Amino acid sequence: MKKVTIRVPATTANLGPGFDAFGCALGLYTDVTFEETDCGLEITGCPEEFTGPDNLVYESYCAVLNTMSEEVRGIKIHIDAHIPICRGLGSSAALLVAGAMGANVLRGNKLSTQGLLNITNAMEGHPDNLAPAFFGGLTASMVDNGLPVSVNFPLHPDWEFVALIPDFDLPTTLARSVLPEQISRADAIYNVSHGALVLKALELGDEKLLRTAMQDRLHQKYRKKLIPDYEKIEALVRTTGAGFCLSGAGPTLLCITRSPRLKEVLAKKLDSITEKNWQMLPLHVEFQGAHIVAMEE
Ligand code: HSE
Image (cartoon, rainbow, N blue to C red; front, side, top):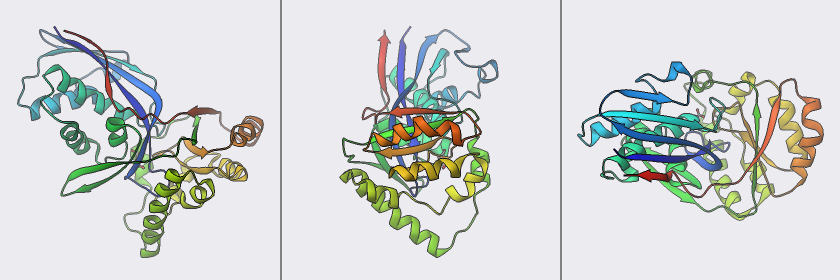
């Protein structure tokens, strides 16, 4: 029986104004191993409540087999997740990507990566985490006629991404429920223009442009009320000149800089200004998307 392990990177979505569109893969991973069996479903490596057929890995695994008109046979799935859950670092997208890729690899790679993105995007509802998880690097995506279209953008090599991860979670459903259904024309113009300049600032390595462009009026001002310490941390990060935004739907906060000063200031002052515990985690950009790390025929 075939066995394969798929590694998927963490992703940070939105990057400020690029709501549901921009994303970047980061050097933190979830590995998922698939082993075909004669019958049944066995899922290990996660809490008992996630070991049923509604597990995201298994759902996307089945969705890909159904699209290929392949029979769903027995499968053992082992999840080794290093991406923290419900923290805004793409943990759910990583599970969907792993399931889709696992099914495709075990059944002869009949679908393209774009085909797998189409299937998982229909499940997740937006491609901003999925695209960098599949393709690596910095991506911008649109959904046109129901199908995701994603492209990679260049990134200056000197950026350092620093994630500030709190000890509490924030379900994406809650973080989306506080967003308004409608926005003003002024706010739409603000986000379109800032989004375009975020991509250019990331390409050029222009930190001053980045911290100005990486502002948003579609989601962060509504979500920050759900995140204790948000405003204090934002004010502290801004004193260093780094770019600052919510990572995905939060609660992780993301800083992007070219200067060592950010980490020095955070190490010295973060604990004293916050009520919650925040872990400072420097992460490199991961340019390799989801891939096979082990395979047995
Ligand atoms: N773009 C999404 C959001 C990312 O901000 O809600 C989280 O899934």
